[in-house]
Image (cartoon, helix red, strand yellow):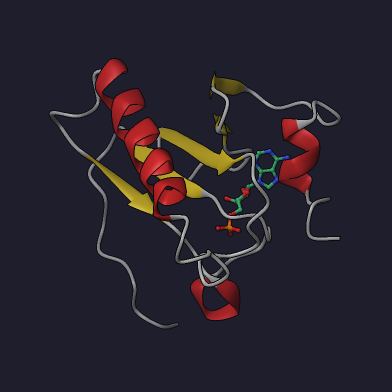
Length: 117
Ligand code: AMP
């Protein structure tokens, strides 16, 4: 079911997670396998399996994820040094959980990325 992914279960508090931010629209929690000193996932409460599935009438949904990540990074003192945000989409994008989420990676210089392996 599209509305019963791992991340939906975290949002419903059926699975534990280190939640660092929540509002009426989204939840943010630490990635269980961090790829940087700070690795937080920003997940909408509305069900959207992938970026590709996002309704054109919902531009605010990704905007809220991006603004929440930026505000979190600023509040944590990470913004001046900088950070990376990533949304993986479908197989070749490396998406493994099919509820839209934005990765915030920070706390160290990011390497180059994006080359196919
Ligand atoms: P993606 O590959 O873009 O779909 O990202 C999924 C992310 O979810 C990966 O970075 C995983 O490490 C992370 N992840 C998987 N299970 C959990 C969990 N139980 N709690 C927090 N993060 C998780």
